[in-house]
Image (tube, rainbow, N blue to C red; front, side, top):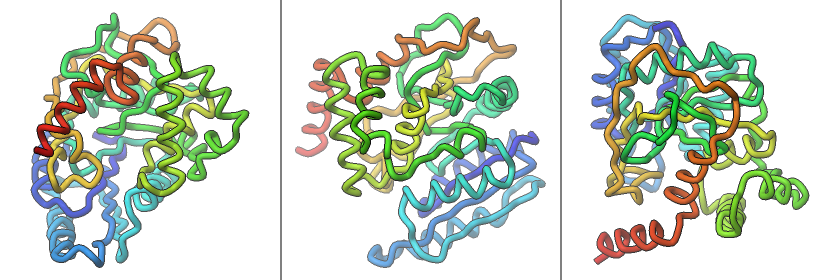
Length: 301
């Protein structure tokens, strides 16, 4: 496979081993490796980071490799966003996979085809490989378009990432935010949730690049390709997951995509996909919120 791939790793040797095994059948020929530095206040983390880097030094297939290994810990937002900029400035477009994501071989072909098909469609900001729903999306084609972005295995172009706004100006500017709310959110619950969430990001209580990119997409009236099937699996739902431990119990297996793809006739947001993401994953409808609270309580007690 010739499409450039960025692999983002940190301190989880077991996840790194599983991902490397999953990538063997695909054997990407051009690989960029990003690894943040260990946190000084986490005993034993330096050894784990070093073990991960040893694994990445010996990829079991022939490929061109470029590395960005950080000496100090920058955190999720700064390290990952800077690494994506480094990657896309170099290659222009590519596939991005973090260490807790196990992709199917068909995920790469899916991304390759759509990176080419939508290369000049400025409104398309990303191609996601996952939708978090335990069953296939109820849509007619093999993918659809959504306002929502999912980063558990994805692809993008430099022309989209160049808009990335780390300052979340789309939320800070009231006129901009009001416009986004009117265009994207279908109910007050969603507006209140995201107003609160970006406040958390602004106060550095959420060390996230992904919500900043999501807001960038909304600010520029962009959209994201979402597959009908989950083409990746997230294995990071455990205590080692810096960003995903709270998703424990929501693991979703990946499926293989068949080809040729069935493409949507029009490039338009599918409200069914948006409804799933908002009511099932983000602000959550009342029944989903009750199930979420029940799961949290069981985990706590």
